[in-house]
Image (cartoon, rainbow, N blue to C red; front, side, top):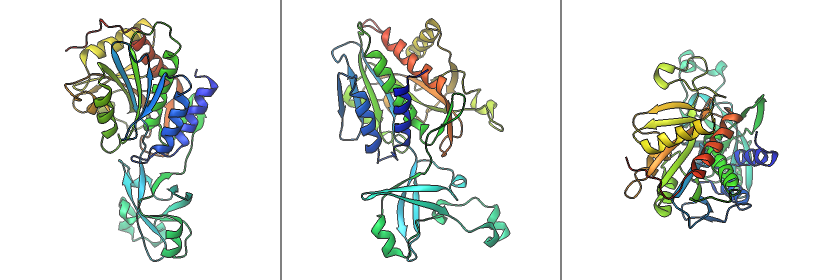
Length: 354
């Protein structure tokens, strides 16, 4: 089980707002934590944070998890002071009405609620339809447009007002586990690797930005680092809930270990090495098929420059892209352990060619 300081870091990271394009607050948390054990911590013009160990080692390894989350952005304020908004990233409009939200402004956070006509005032047919984002509004209690614009501005980012909690046993619930959990796992892997006296590889741990909208952070950080091999860390939808089709999405269960993905973006050599490493160190794992794009930073990493041998390790997540994402902390711990074991066994003789 993670040490208490690590859990406190996870809680702070998840609770700190970081919609795509507005990751700075979470990146400051990540860099502060990683600076306690990394040889060097850097950031770049895109907003990526990079912790470095054993910079002169070989091969060059990149571990990457994105720190951005889904959210919203203020689009328009009407004369009555109600705020209209757009989505940042993929959000199911069905889950948005009647949620509490926080608008993050230059003057500090502003609380609000997402409004919609009550069922008593809807036509029967309208009540059966899924809402559209542009039909919903945020109520911050402003009396008019002028008062609202004194408190918020067009373009301000918005997140759901929900934080980290332990649900039951080792099940944790929060918004933003996708994928601040991955950025956390990368940081923990760096921390554990920093204690190794015979580390041969150069390790670059990246908390990337904008994965939910563009993969820009993964593209630019990979181009700059020039890794020989990389492991992307993200979440994967769990299929251990009612109505989740295992026939379509495979069998992915919470508490059964991280998921090693196989597919066109994944290097066969890295895939094989990850599995051998998991078996060698008795790390439980599951398998998922990704025949085309993975929908993760791996899609940008493996085609960078002349190509990068890339692996993808995922953590099962229930209710992805909602305010109540659930993960099992054992899966997260084993994910970090797998990266540590993989990197720790590498030396300059490693061959990643297909």
